[in-house]
Image (tube, rainbow, N blue to C red):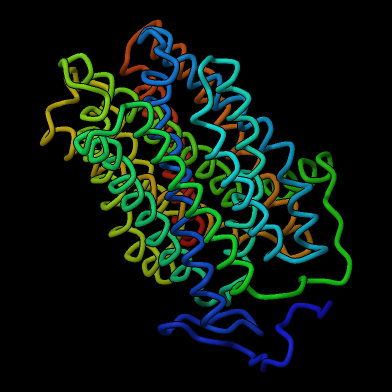
Length: 442
Protein backbone atom coordinates (compact mmCIF):
# COMPACT_ATOMS: atom_id res chain seq x y z
CA UNK A 1 0.00 0.00 0.00
CA UNK A 2 1.39 3.44 -0.84
CA UNK A 3 2.23 5.73 2.02
CA UNK A 4 -0.18 8.65 1.98
CA UNK A 5 -0.56 9.36 -1.71
CA UNK A 6 -2.60 8.28 -4.72
CA UNK A 7 -0.90 5.90 -7.10
CA UNK A 8 0.47 7.48 -10.29
CA UNK A 9 -0.72 10.98 -9.47
CA UNK A 10 1.36 14.06 -8.71
CA UNK A 11 1.72 15.21 -5.13
CA UNK A 12 2.24 18.97 -5.17
CA UNK A 13 3.45 20.71 -2.06
CA UNK A 14 0.14 22.50 -1.63
CA UNK A 15 -3.02 21.98 -3.64
CA UNK A 16 -5.62 24.74 -3.63
CA UNK A 17 -9.40 24.74 -3.61
CA UNK A 18 -11.01 28.14 -4.20
CA UNK A 19 -8.03 29.89 -2.62
CA UNK A 20 -7.81 27.48 0.34
CA UNK A 21 -4.37 25.91 0.64
CA UNK A 22 -4.42 22.17 1.22
CA UNK A 23 -1.93 20.03 3.09
CA UNK A 24 1.03 18.68 1.09
CA UNK A 25 -0.05 15.99 -1.37
CA UNK A 26 -3.77 16.82 -1.33
CA UNK A 27 -5.64 17.54 -4.54
CA UNK A 28 -8.79 19.66 -4.84
CA UNK A 29 -10.87 16.57 -5.62
CA UNK A 30 -9.89 15.02 -2.28
CA UNK A 31 -11.21 18.10 -0.50
CA UNK A 32 -14.40 18.13 -2.60
CA UNK A 33 -15.16 14.49 -1.82
CA UNK A 34 -14.61 15.22 1.86
CA UNK A 35 -17.06 18.13 1.69
CA UNK A 36 -19.63 15.82 0.10
CA UNK A 37 -19.01 13.28 2.86
CA UNK A 38 -19.42 15.98 5.51
CA UNK A 39 -22.72 17.06 3.89
CA UNK A 40 -24.12 13.53 3.95
CA UNK A 41 -22.68 12.46 7.31
CA UNK A 42 -24.03 15.33 9.37
CA UNK A 43 -27.26 15.44 7.38
CA UNK A 44 -28.08 11.79 8.02
CA UNK A 45 -27.10 11.92 11.69
CA UNK A 46 -29.28 15.01 12.17
CA UNK A 47 -32.15 13.25 10.40
CA UNK A 48 -31.88 10.22 12.71
CA UNK A 49 -32.23 12.47 15.76
CA UNK A 50 -35.15 14.30 14.20
CA UNK A 51 -36.92 11.07 13.19
CA UNK A 52 -36.80 9.50 16.65
CA UNK A 53 -40.12 11.14 17.54
CA UNK A 54 -41.74 9.41 14.55
CA UNK A 55 -40.49 6.00 15.67
CA UNK A 56 -41.65 6.57 19.25
CA UNK A 57 -45.13 7.72 18.23
CA UNK A 58 -45.85 5.58 15.17
CA UNK A 59 -43.87 2.37 15.57
CA UNK A 60 -43.86 2.10 19.38
CA UNK A 61 -46.98 4.13 20.33
CA UNK A 62 -45.05 5.30 23.40
CA UNK A 63 -46.86 7.66 25.82
CA UNK A 64 -45.66 11.25 25.56
CA UNK A 65 -44.56 11.47 29.20
CA UNK A 66 -41.99 8.71 28.63
CA UNK A 67 -40.50 9.98 25.40
CA UNK A 68 -37.95 12.44 26.80
CA UNK A 69 -36.22 9.88 29.02
CA UNK A 70 -36.45 7.25 26.27
CA UNK A 71 -34.62 9.30 23.66
CA UNK A 72 -32.10 10.31 26.32
CA UNK A 73 -31.47 6.68 27.26
CA UNK A 74 -31.07 5.74 23.59
CA UNK A 75 -28.65 8.57 22.93
CA UNK A 76 -26.72 7.86 26.14
CA UNK A 77 -26.25 4.20 25.21
CA UNK A 78 -25.33 5.14 21.63
CA UNK A 79 -22.67 7.53 22.81
CA UNK A 80 -21.13 4.94 25.14
CA UNK A 81 -20.78 2.54 22.20
CA UNK A 82 -19.42 5.27 19.93
CA UNK A 83 -16.97 6.45 22.59
CA UNK A 84 -15.65 2.91 23.02
CA UNK A 85 -15.11 2.60 19.26
CA UNK A 86 -13.57 5.98 18.43
CA UNK A 87 -10.01 4.96 19.33
CA UNK A 88 -10.14 1.59 17.53
CA UNK A 89 -11.56 3.20 14.38
CA UNK A 90 -8.95 5.96 14.56
CA UNK A 91 -6.14 3.41 14.91
CA UNK A 92 -7.60 1.33 12.07
CA UNK A 93 -7.75 4.40 9.83
CA UNK A 94 -4.08 5.09 10.60
CA UNK A 95 -3.21 1.54 9.54
CA UNK A 96 -5.38 0.92 6.48
CA UNK A 97 -6.40 4.45 5.47
CA UNK A 98 -9.33 6.81 5.88
CA UNK A 99 -11.21 5.65 2.75
CA UNK A 100 -12.08 2.07 3.79
CA UNK A 101 -13.09 3.08 7.32
CA UNK A 102 -15.33 5.91 6.07
CA UNK A 103 -16.90 3.62 3.44
CA UNK A 104 -17.42 0.87 6.02
CA UNK A 105 -19.16 3.35 8.30
CA UNK A 106 -21.60 4.38 5.56
CA UNK A 107 -22.37 0.74 4.71
CA UNK A 108 -23.04 0.01 8.38
CA UNK A 109 -25.39 3.00 8.58
CA UNK A 110 -27.18 1.69 5.50
CA UNK A 111 -27.85 -1.60 7.29
CA UNK A 112 -28.97 0.31 10.40
CA UNK A 113 -31.54 2.33 8.45
CA UNK A 114 -32.97 -0.94 7.12
CA UNK A 115 -33.35 -2.27 10.67
CA UNK A 116 -35.08 0.76 12.25
CA UNK A 117 -38.53 0.18 10.65
CA UNK A 118 -38.62 -3.32 12.20
CA UNK A 119 -38.61 -1.99 15.80
CA UNK A 120 -41.91 -2.32 17.67
CA UNK A 121 -40.76 -2.17 21.31
CA UNK A 122 -38.28 -0.06 23.29
CA UNK A 123 -35.78 -2.96 23.62
CA UNK A 124 -35.95 -3.58 19.87
CA UNK A 125 -35.46 0.12 19.13
CA UNK A 126 -32.54 0.14 21.57
CA UNK A 127 -30.96 -2.79 19.74
CA UNK A 128 -31.36 -1.00 16.40
CA UNK A 129 -29.87 2.18 17.84
CA UNK A 130 -26.88 0.36 19.34
CA UNK A 131 -26.23 -1.37 16.02
CA UNK A 132 -26.50 1.98 14.23
CA UNK A 133 -24.04 3.59 16.64
CA UNK A 134 -21.18 1.42 15.31
CA UNK A 135 -21.56 3.14 11.95
CA UNK A 136 -21.92 6.50 13.69
CA UNK A 137 -18.57 5.94 15.42
CA UNK A 138 -16.86 5.10 12.14
CA UNK A 139 -18.17 8.03 10.10
CA UNK A 140 -17.93 10.44 13.02
CA UNK A 141 -14.30 9.58 13.65
CA UNK A 142 -13.44 9.97 9.97
CA UNK A 143 -15.38 13.24 9.72
CA UNK A 144 -13.03 14.86 12.23
CA UNK A 145 -9.88 13.00 11.17
CA UNK A 146 -10.06 13.88 7.47
CA UNK A 147 -10.97 17.46 8.39
CA UNK A 148 -7.76 17.70 10.43
CA UNK A 149 -5.71 16.08 7.66
CA UNK A 150 -6.84 18.10 4.64
CA UNK A 151 -6.05 21.84 5.01
CA UNK A 152 -2.72 23.59 5.36
CA UNK A 153 -2.41 25.33 8.73
CA UNK A 154 -2.58 28.80 7.15
CA UNK A 155 -6.02 27.98 5.70
CA UNK A 156 -7.34 25.78 8.49
CA UNK A 157 -9.92 28.29 9.71
CA UNK A 158 -11.33 28.87 6.24
CA UNK A 159 -11.49 25.18 5.39
CA UNK A 160 -13.14 24.33 8.72
CA UNK A 161 -15.61 27.14 8.03
CA UNK A 162 -16.41 25.77 4.57
CA UNK A 163 -16.76 22.27 6.03
CA UNK A 164 -19.12 23.69 8.64
CA UNK A 165 -21.15 25.24 5.82
CA UNK A 166 -21.49 21.85 4.13
CA UNK A 167 -22.34 20.13 7.40
CA UNK A 168 -25.07 22.68 8.12
CA UNK A 169 -26.32 22.39 4.54
CA UNK A 170 -26.53 18.63 4.89
CA UNK A 171 -28.58 18.85 8.08
CA UNK A 172 -30.91 21.46 6.59
CA UNK A 173 -31.41 19.79 3.20
CA UNK A 174 -31.83 16.21 4.38
CA UNK A 175 -34.24 17.13 7.15
CA UNK A 176 -36.11 19.44 4.78
CA UNK A 177 -36.50 16.63 2.23
CA UNK A 178 -36.65 13.43 4.28
CA UNK A 179 -38.88 14.83 7.04
CA UNK A 180 -41.40 15.89 4.37
CA UNK A 181 -41.37 12.53 2.61
CA UNK A 182 -43.74 10.69 5.01
CA UNK A 183 -46.41 13.38 4.54
CA UNK A 184 -46.00 13.28 0.77
CA UNK A 185 -46.31 9.48 0.81
CA UNK A 186 -49.35 9.53 3.07
CA UNK A 187 -51.01 12.12 0.87
CA UNK A 188 -50.37 9.70 -2.01
CA UNK A 189 -52.22 6.95 -0.12
CA UNK A 190 -49.37 5.12 1.61
CA UNK A 191 -50.12 3.81 5.13
CA UNK A 192 -48.48 5.73 8.00
CA UNK A 193 -46.00 3.09 9.20
CA UNK A 194 -45.12 2.16 5.62
CA UNK A 195 -44.41 5.80 4.80
CA UNK A 196 -41.87 5.97 7.62
CA UNK A 197 -40.24 2.72 6.49
CA UNK A 198 -39.87 3.97 2.91
CA UNK A 199 -38.25 7.16 4.21
CA UNK A 200 -35.71 5.15 6.17
CA UNK A 201 -35.06 2.88 3.18
CA UNK A 202 -34.27 5.94 1.08
CA UNK A 203 -31.78 7.07 3.73
CA UNK A 204 -30.22 3.60 3.57
CA UNK A 205 -29.77 3.86 -0.20
CA UNK A 206 -28.13 7.26 0.22
CA UNK A 207 -25.65 5.73 2.68
CA UNK A 208 -24.78 2.95 0.23
CA UNK A 209 -24.15 5.44 -2.58
CA UNK A 210 -22.01 7.59 -0.26
CA UNK A 211 -19.88 4.57 0.68
CA UNK A 212 -18.97 4.15 -2.99
CA UNK A 213 -18.27 7.87 -3.43
CA UNK A 214 -15.91 8.22 -0.46
CA UNK A 215 -14.09 4.99 -1.25
CA UNK A 216 -13.51 6.14 -4.81
CA UNK A 217 -12.66 9.75 -4.06
CA UNK A 218 -10.91 10.18 -0.72
CA UNK A 219 -7.14 10.10 -0.64
CA UNK A 220 -5.52 6.68 -0.56
CA UNK A 221 -2.91 5.46 1.85
CA UNK A 222 -2.19 6.14 5.49
CA UNK A 223 -0.44 9.05 7.22
CA UNK A 224 2.32 6.74 8.44
CA UNK A 225 3.56 3.22 7.96
CA UNK A 226 2.76 2.31 11.54
CA UNK A 227 0.41 3.93 14.01
CA UNK A 228 -1.06 2.82 17.27
CA UNK A 229 -3.99 4.16 19.23
CA UNK A 230 -3.02 6.13 22.29
CA UNK A 231 -4.20 4.47 25.51
CA UNK A 232 -6.92 6.38 27.36
CA UNK A 233 -4.67 7.12 30.35
CA UNK A 234 -2.04 8.68 28.09
CA UNK A 235 -4.65 10.77 26.29
CA UNK A 236 -5.97 12.14 29.58
CA UNK A 237 -2.57 12.74 31.20
CA UNK A 238 -0.95 14.39 28.17
CA UNK A 239 -4.11 16.28 27.19
CA UNK A 240 -4.49 17.75 30.69
CA UNK A 241 -0.78 18.58 30.89
CA UNK A 242 -1.01 20.51 27.63
CA UNK A 243 -4.03 22.42 28.93
CA UNK A 244 -2.32 23.27 32.23
CA UNK A 245 0.45 24.93 30.27
CA UNK A 246 -1.94 26.73 27.91
CA UNK A 247 -5.33 28.04 29.07
CA UNK A 248 -6.41 28.46 25.46
CA UNK A 249 -6.45 24.66 25.16
CA UNK A 250 -8.70 24.54 28.25
CA UNK A 251 -11.05 26.92 26.49
CA UNK A 252 -11.01 24.77 23.33
CA UNK A 253 -11.97 21.74 25.44
CA UNK A 254 -14.83 23.72 26.99
CA UNK A 255 -16.01 24.86 23.56
CA UNK A 256 -16.15 21.22 22.52
CA UNK A 257 -18.20 20.40 25.61
CA UNK A 258 -20.60 23.29 25.15
CA UNK A 259 -21.10 22.95 21.40
CA UNK A 260 -21.77 19.20 21.51
CA UNK A 261 -24.18 19.65 24.40
CA UNK A 262 -25.91 22.28 22.26
CA UNK A 263 -26.09 19.78 19.42
CA UNK A 264 -27.93 17.27 21.62
CA UNK A 265 -30.53 19.79 22.74
CA UNK A 266 -31.01 21.21 19.25
CA UNK A 267 -31.10 17.88 17.45
CA UNK A 268 -33.01 15.81 20.02
CA UNK A 269 -35.04 17.88 22.45
CA UNK A 270 -36.02 20.75 20.15
CA UNK A 271 -37.29 18.39 17.46
CA UNK A 272 -39.09 16.21 20.04
CA UNK A 273 -40.69 19.23 21.68
CA UNK A 274 -41.84 20.64 18.34
CA UNK A 275 -43.39 17.39 17.15
CA UNK A 276 -45.12 16.77 20.48
CA UNK A 277 -46.50 20.31 20.44
CA UNK A 278 -48.02 19.81 17.00
CA UNK A 279 -49.43 16.43 18.02
CA UNK A 280 -51.07 18.16 21.01
CA UNK A 281 -52.71 20.54 18.52
CA UNK A 282 -54.47 17.52 17.01
CA UNK A 283 -52.51 17.10 13.75
CA UNK A 284 -51.32 13.71 12.54
CA UNK A 285 -47.74 12.48 12.93
CA UNK A 286 -46.81 13.17 9.32
CA UNK A 287 -48.07 16.75 9.61
CA UNK A 288 -46.30 17.16 12.96
CA UNK A 289 -42.97 16.04 11.50
CA UNK A 290 -43.52 18.20 8.43
CA UNK A 291 -44.23 21.36 10.44
CA UNK A 292 -41.55 20.70 13.07
CA UNK A 293 -38.77 20.69 10.49
CA UNK A 294 -38.96 24.42 9.73
CA UNK A 295 -37.45 25.90 12.93
CA UNK A 296 -34.76 23.22 12.82
CA UNK A 297 -34.01 24.06 9.20
CA UNK A 298 -33.89 27.77 10.13
CA UNK A 299 -31.22 26.97 12.73
CA UNK A 300 -29.22 24.97 10.20
CA UNK A 301 -29.46 27.66 7.52
CA UNK A 302 -28.33 30.29 10.04
CA UNK A 303 -25.43 28.05 10.94
CA UNK A 304 -24.36 27.42 7.36
CA UNK A 305 -24.44 31.14 6.57
CA UNK A 306 -22.45 31.84 9.72
CA UNK A 307 -19.86 29.08 9.14
CA UNK A 308 -17.81 30.61 6.29
CA UNK A 309 -17.93 34.04 7.91
CA UNK A 310 -16.63 32.63 11.18
CA UNK A 311 -14.04 30.59 9.31
CA UNK A 312 -12.67 33.70 7.62
CA UNK A 313 -12.66 35.63 10.92
CA UNK A 314 -10.73 32.84 12.63
CA UNK A 315 -7.81 33.37 10.28
CA UNK A 316 -7.77 37.10 11.07
CA UNK A 317 -8.72 37.66 14.72
CA UNK A 318 -8.09 36.04 18.08
CA UNK A 319 -9.87 32.69 18.00
CA UNK A 320 -10.69 32.83 21.70
CA UNK A 321 -12.73 35.99 21.13
CA UNK A 322 -14.79 34.24 18.48
CA UNK A 323 -15.49 31.41 20.93
CA UNK A 324 -16.55 33.89 23.61
CA UNK A 325 -19.05 35.54 21.27
CA UNK A 326 -20.36 32.12 20.21
CA UNK A 327 -21.01 31.11 23.82
CA UNK A 328 -22.78 34.40 24.52
CA UNK A 329 -25.09 33.85 21.54
CA UNK A 330 -25.80 30.27 22.53
CA UNK A 331 -26.51 31.15 26.19
CA UNK A 332 -28.97 33.85 25.12
CA UNK A 333 -30.68 31.63 22.55
CA UNK A 334 -31.15 28.65 24.88
CA UNK A 335 -32.48 30.89 27.64
CA UNK A 336 -35.06 32.40 25.28
CA UNK A 337 -35.98 28.98 23.90
CA UNK A 338 -36.58 27.64 27.40
CA UNK A 339 -39.11 30.39 28.10
CA UNK A 340 -41.22 29.70 24.99
CA UNK A 341 -44.47 28.09 26.18
CA UNK A 342 -45.92 27.35 22.75
CA UNK A 343 -43.22 26.29 20.24
CA UNK A 344 -45.78 26.22 17.44
CA UNK A 345 -45.45 30.04 17.29
CA UNK A 346 -43.39 29.83 14.13
CA UNK A 347 -42.01 33.37 13.86
CA UNK A 348 -40.88 33.59 17.48
CA UNK A 349 -39.27 30.16 17.47
CA UNK A 350 -37.64 30.76 14.08
CA UNK A 351 -35.95 33.91 15.43
CA UNK A 352 -34.61 31.99 18.43
CA UNK A 353 -33.59 29.08 16.18
CA UNK A 354 -31.45 31.46 14.11
CA UNK A 355 -29.52 32.44 17.24
CA UNK A 356 -29.19 28.76 18.20
CA UNK A 357 -27.73 27.86 14.83
CA UNK A 358 -25.31 30.78 14.77
CA UNK A 359 -24.00 30.16 18.28
CA UNK A 360 -23.62 26.41 17.84
CA UNK A 361 -21.70 26.46 14.56
CA UNK A 362 -19.47 29.33 15.68
CA UNK A 363 -18.54 27.42 18.84
CA UNK A 364 -17.82 24.19 16.95
CA UNK A 365 -15.63 25.88 14.35
CA UNK A 366 -13.82 28.07 16.89
CA UNK A 367 -13.09 25.08 19.11
CA UNK A 368 -11.78 22.90 16.27
CA UNK A 369 -9.64 25.68 14.84
CA UNK A 370 -8.26 26.72 18.23
CA UNK A 371 -7.24 23.12 18.90
CA UNK A 372 -5.43 22.92 15.57
CA UNK A 373 -3.57 26.13 16.39
CA UNK A 374 -2.65 25.50 20.03
CA UNK A 375 -2.07 21.73 20.29
CA UNK A 376 1.70 21.05 20.67
CA UNK A 377 2.90 18.88 17.81
CA UNK A 378 4.43 16.22 20.06
CA UNK A 379 1.15 15.63 21.97
CA UNK A 380 -1.30 16.61 19.23
CA UNK A 381 -2.99 13.21 19.23
CA UNK A 382 -3.60 13.34 22.97
CA UNK A 383 -5.00 16.88 22.82
CA UNK A 384 -7.44 16.01 20.04
CA UNK A 385 -8.27 12.78 21.82
CA UNK A 386 -9.15 14.59 25.05
CA UNK A 387 -11.21 17.10 23.05
CA UNK A 388 -13.17 14.16 21.67
CA UNK A 389 -13.67 12.86 25.20
CA UNK A 390 -15.01 16.30 26.21
CA UNK A 391 -17.48 16.16 23.32
CA UNK A 392 -18.62 12.68 24.37
CA UNK A 393 -18.88 13.78 28.00
CA UNK A 394 -21.13 16.64 26.91
CA UNK A 395 -23.41 14.26 25.02
CA UNK A 396 -23.62 11.90 27.99
CA UNK A 397 -24.15 14.74 30.47
CA UNK A 398 -26.84 16.45 28.41
CA UNK A 399 -28.74 13.23 27.74
CA UNK A 400 -28.48 12.05 31.33
CA UNK A 401 -29.92 15.25 32.80
CA UNK A 402 -31.88 16.53 29.81
CA UNK A 403 -34.27 13.60 29.52
CA UNK A 404 -35.11 13.68 33.21
CA UNK A 405 -35.63 17.45 33.16
CA UNK A 406 -37.78 17.20 30.02
CA UNK A 407 -40.16 14.56 31.42
CA UNK A 408 -40.12 15.34 35.14
CA UNK A 409 -39.52 19.10 35.52
CA UNK A 410 -40.24 21.11 32.41
CA UNK A 411 -39.97 20.76 28.65
CA UNK A 412 -37.78 23.86 28.80
CA UNK A 413 -35.42 22.14 31.25
CA UNK A 414 -32.80 20.93 28.75
CA UNK A 415 -32.65 24.41 27.21
CA UNK A 416 -32.03 26.11 30.56
CA UNK A 417 -29.41 23.45 31.37
CA UNK A 418 -27.38 24.30 28.27
CA UNK A 419 -27.93 28.02 28.76
CA UNK A 420 -26.15 27.68 32.11
CA UNK A 421 -23.33 25.60 30.61
CA UNK A 422 -22.78 28.08 27.79
CA UNK A 423 -22.85 31.02 30.19
CA UNK A 424 -20.18 29.42 32.39
CA UNK A 425 -17.93 28.82 29.36
CA UNK A 426 -18.53 32.40 28.21
CA UNK A 427 -17.34 33.71 31.59
CA UNK A 428 -14.21 31.54 31.45
CA UNK A 429 -13.38 32.75 27.93
CA UNK A 430 -14.03 36.37 28.84
CA UNK A 431 -11.63 36.16 31.78
CA UNK A 432 -9.07 34.53 29.48
CA UNK A 433 -9.21 37.37 26.97
CA UNK A 434 -8.95 39.99 29.71
CA UNK A 435 -5.89 38.28 31.18
CA UNK A 436 -4.32 38.28 27.73
CA UNK A 437 -5.01 42.01 27.38
CA UNK A 438 -3.42 42.72 30.77
CA UNK A 439 -0.36 40.64 29.84
CA UNK A 440 0.10 42.54 26.57
CA UNK A 441 -0.22 45.92 28.31
CA UNK A 442 2.43 45.15 30.96
